[in-house]
Image (tube, rainbow, N blue to C red; front, side):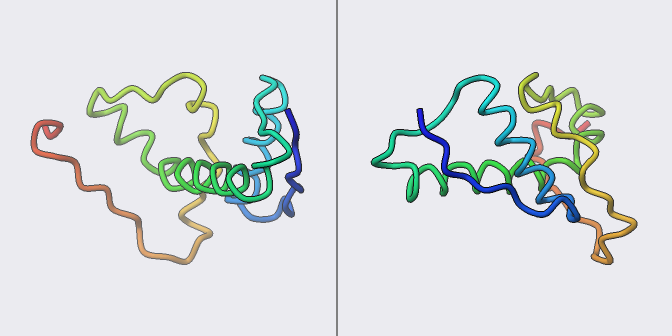
Length: 100
């Protein structure tokens, strides 16, 4: 396994999610081979971190609709602070079978 990911500044929430993801991967000994770490590995980690960042704000909505977030990903909660983001509240459109 090979890690070639540099930590990002700890100021922004999305960077903290990225850093936490790298820490979790190292703890679980998840990595990429030397041949693919720079291109594929970076793409996989960045995409997963961005997805976790987007879903962070919606944990309560998922829970209210009985949608369980798998345990390894539930620790990525509390990083998105909407009140300091100065952005419109993100929306998630659930398929009709998930609506109550």
